[in-house]
Amino acid sequence: MSRSRWSSLVDRALEASVVGSFTRVGSSLRAQGEAWTDPEHLSRRRVLVTGATSGIGLAAALRMARLGAHVHLVGRNPQKLSDAERQVAAVSEGDVYSHLCDLSSCHGTRTLADQLGSSNLLIDVLVHNAGALLSNFTLTTEGVETTVATHLLNPYLLTEALLSSNTLAPAGRVITMSSGGMYTQRADIDKLEMTAADYSGSVAYARAKRAQTLLSQYWTRRYGDSGRGFHVVHPGWVDTPGVDEGLPLFSKVMGPLLRSPDQGADTLVWLAGQADGEPASGQFWHDRHPRSLYRVPSTRLSPEQEVHLGNDIATWCDERIAAVLGPE
Ligand SMILES: NC(=O)c1ccc[n+]([C@@H]2O[C@H](COP(=O)([O-])OP(=O)(O)OC[C@H]3O[C@@H](n4cnc5c(N)ncnc54)[C@H](OP(=O)(O)O)[C@@H]3O)[C@@H](O)[C@H]2O)c1
Image 1 (cartoon, rainbow, N blue to C red):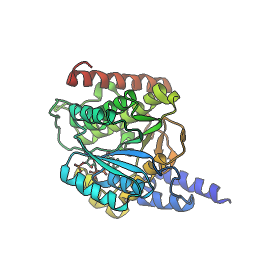
Image 2 (cartoon, rainbow, N blue to C red):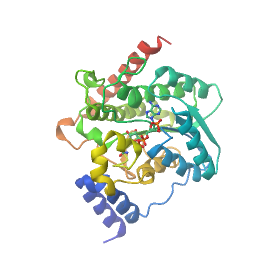
Image 3 (cartoon, rainbow, N blue to C red):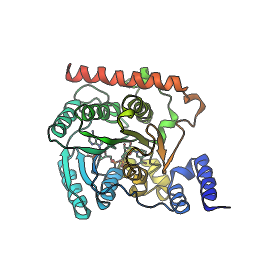
Image 4 (cartoon, helix red, strand yellow):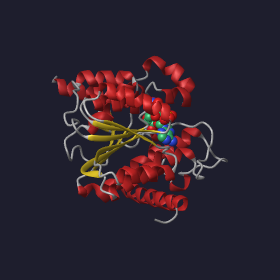
């Protein structure tokens, strides 16, 4: 049997097993079997990473900096941001910049987008990675449920703003860090923003992560012809401060099997470093392969429903942003 046939069989067996795929077992076996190498096109690319002060985002920023990218770090905590900038600058082949922004706030994100837009900067890769699984219901200062504000509303706002100011380069790409947790939830526009009465942290998180996949398809339909690419990734189960805090029991039980942050960041970095126009936009990635959006039959949508819901999610974001910021 050829090496590629053997690797493909291993990949499919891992994918079917869930635990094998999501843990460090999946990452290690696939990396060995497929002889993963560093992506070739990161040198001098301008990359902006949100949630770059910790876990997967910091690992991604470090690796892309080592591969020659100019890296823009976005974080909300000044001390953590300057620590991250120091760490990235120490290994960087390119330039390093940092931007302070709370990405649960539309006003904060709008200011960041305006600063980037007025600086004549071009961004080649926009990485939406900031996020957290919040056990308790919270509203942002702007009155939006925090999970959906951080994972969906503000990534939408930042992407649309950078597209309209042409800050996202003509062959630029947007990569969104979703989660395998999204497999548990069916997309439903009426259930997107949870209330104090019905809030569950894991459900709110999974719904926002599911919505990210439909939004990426929406952007592909709307902007794909411009040469830009929109990709969504799930990193598997990764040993980060976010998992320790959001899922302490899971983190303790799964500890030795969790991926390292570097393993969790691999597909994101790989996508960031592919040639212009590659790979095809609008797909959901894990361990360098496009994956199905569905594992649970009751969550499945038809292609028509995906289009319909993707459009509805974009409209919901527009209306929610207008309610917070006022009309443009
Ligand atoms: N770890 C996993 O197993 C796993 C699995 C699936 C998906 N993910 C996703 O991967 C991404 C990274 O998570 P992680 O595990 O690396 O967690 P992490 O170590 O806690 O990193 C999360 C990053 O997001 C930032 N962040 C959170 N809310 C923010 C806000 N409102 N404004 C600005 N920055 C904010 C955090 O900033 P602070 O440092 O200031 O808190 C931190 O830099 C998240 O989107 C997460 O949902 C992780």
